[in-house]
Image (cartoon, rainbow, N blue to C red; front, side, top):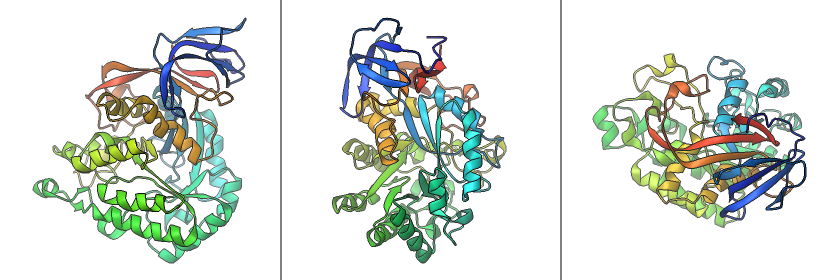
Amino acid sequence: MQGIQGKRMTLHLVNARLVDPDALTDKEGSLLIENGRIAARDVPTPEGATVIDCGGKCLAPGIVDWGVKVGEPGERHKESFRSAGLSAAAGGVTTIIARPDTNPAIDTPETLEFVTRRAAESPVRIHHMAALTKGRQGREMTEIGFLLDAGAVAFSDGDHVVEDTKVLSRALTYARSLGALVIGHPQDPGLSRGAAATNGKFASLRGIPAVNPMAERMGLDRDLALIEMTGVRYHFDQITTARALPALQRAKANGRDVTAGISIHHLTLNEFDIGDYRTFFKLTPPLRSEEDRKALVAAVASGLIDVVGSMHTPQDEESKRLPFEEAASGAVGLETLLPAAMRLYHSGDLSLPQIFRVLALNPANRLGLPQGRLAVGAPADLVLFDPDAPFVLDRFTLKSKSKNTPFDGTRMEGRVLATWVGGAQVFGE
């Protein structure tokens, strides 16, 4: 496959196992790529086309990873747009939805235009969220209309919860008038402040400051009331506890325009993984109980949870090599998102089309992007992978500048063989 770089080249990817998240099918077939788009499926090879034999491996839409932290501006030493793009391509991620929790925050059209220019050096597509309030401080809303015009795909203060309900209601009302999508972090800020683990016997025995899972439910309930009041389009970035699911289900049943996501780490790890105080397992929100993890996997399978992402949060060694409660939260995940998701496939919890529905199709649909599907006319953003290929992850082989992955030294299955963006190969031999 080496040398397949031209966007205008006609490619015919044959002998592939097509994973279609829209039709929820997984069957043998082929794709014809012309002018960077999917031109046809299961047709004879046209004259002059370059044939790529996929060897019976899985061919799926490229992942649309929602909630990726890139260090620019302010923390380029942790992750640049180029390193994030290389890491994404190696992980089968063809579209990054970048978070606004940078330094300074992406809260003005000028800052958004700066990062948009910087993102041009990435081999994958990058879209940006903008901050909901200035400086992510929860005091004054940003210029939502101007930021929309500058290309913002959604608005979020990340894990900084807007505590002033009046400020938040005004921002949501204004966002509703413009049709903007708002992303919230469902946590009660008072209860969750300073917490490094989930409340329970396990955290108590290890002396780690913890938060009750009800903090998530309380934050969710408040936001749902404001959603009902304003009618805004809303997405919860991470629902991680079983107690929050009934309220989310009622909101959807009542016709609220709400969706919800979860990180792959919360679907594949639990609170016991922090047992030896390994700070690579310190996340926001903290890892939950095994009962919560199983409930959330079932919620993904049922469609109640719409999006699964890496929540890629690069941290340098200095910020992680500290006592557990003082260490920075977050883990990198662009390259481990797909193999970690394969755990759910091999366990029988989710089929491959279900996995790519939450990794690619649903996030693209929610953000109004044409990616995430194998439909004729869709951009040829694709990933070829072997779901059964075993390997032991060595964090020092990651293309990310930061190496803070909880999967270091873990035996995993699922290896990316090639990645295409707009018909141009950006990863693979």
